[in-house]
Image 1 (cartoon, helix red, strand yellow):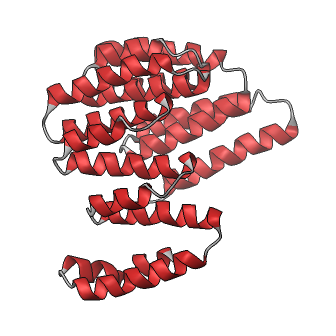
Image 2 (tube, helix red, strand yellow; image 1 turned 180 degrees about the vertical axis):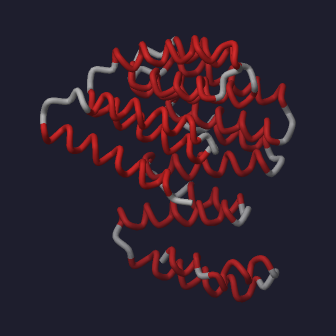
Image 3 (cartoon, rainbow, N blue to C red; image 1 turned 90 degrees about the horizontal axis):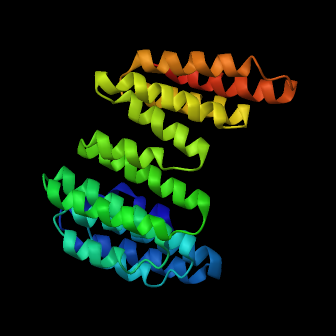
Length: 273
């Protein structure tokens, strides 16, 4: 079903305004949709919504979403739609859509995406307003992990907006040590020189409090990959070195082999041109 809509001819027809060809592919997709079992149909409609979002056919995307009742399938598509609408200059409509998301843990993420979209358009005050809404809303989340993840995303949002002071304060408030450590390392990687050392010390402290050694190794492997993507080879090497040092302390042979495999995967990615 989704392959039909991902067919390059479908995209080309839409781009060239050949609605007839595009409609024929869409009718074929909808026919196949009716043949699917209920669970598969929900997943397919969520995928169709994301495809329509990619094509900037926002109203059609929303129509598909109205038929998706499984929140786990609907929310990722909603977040993509909200972000795309805001980047397209339809921020008010996007915010109205964000407010229809029931669970605060997902609504927080929607406001963070709104903030970054508005910031990309040069609307810095509006971006700050969206992050402040997220900061208030995150306190209403009951699930500890979900609250910590939301706080992390808000902290990273403030980092993108250039407000390091607020970003640091938000990160330090995170109670989940694993998420706190990851967030502080990310802040440290982009901190001004006068704050970098302090943030590294805070990140190291949070990392030591993170009880699972394999989790700490995996975290450093992921951070090494992120550093590579950000063209920071020094940071990537530092995280690999830290990960190796932790892996060497793991006594259980199975856990240690998994940790070293995670680091080897990161190293392989770093060595790619």
